[in-house]
Amino acid sequence: MTHHVSSMLETYPKDLGGIDTQKLAECIEACFECAQTCTACADACLAEDMVAELTQCIRLNLDCADLCETTGRVLSRQTGNNIDVNRAALETCRTACRSCAEECEKHVDMHEHCRVCAEACRRCEIACADLLASLD
Image (cartoon, rainbow, N blue to C red; front, top):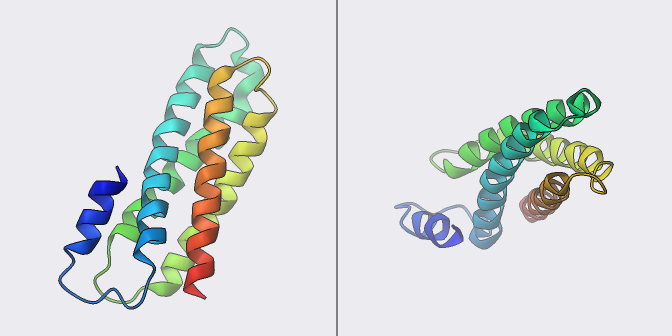
């Protein structure tokens, strides 16, 4: 997916204002990947026999998926300057990813889908932190 994200950023007709396009592309990709993974993990949790014990995991999966999707979409738009919103979105996404990963990590011994989800969340959390650091 990075290829398409990078290709789209490269075709942007204006200067991107010094933003690290590799970090931006990696973060956009990580956001969309995490959104899909969290959605799938929530669905897998719903299919588990012990679904009642996974309520918090499902909630955090869905919150994280929504925030990652939104962050990926916001970061994909480069027209104009919206750095304050970008920073806020990245911070919020990073927090959601950390919370979701921590919850999923509690269930990895019993549910493989939670391990996969935790890994995607940690990757996105790091990508958001890396992009944020490059903006400062």
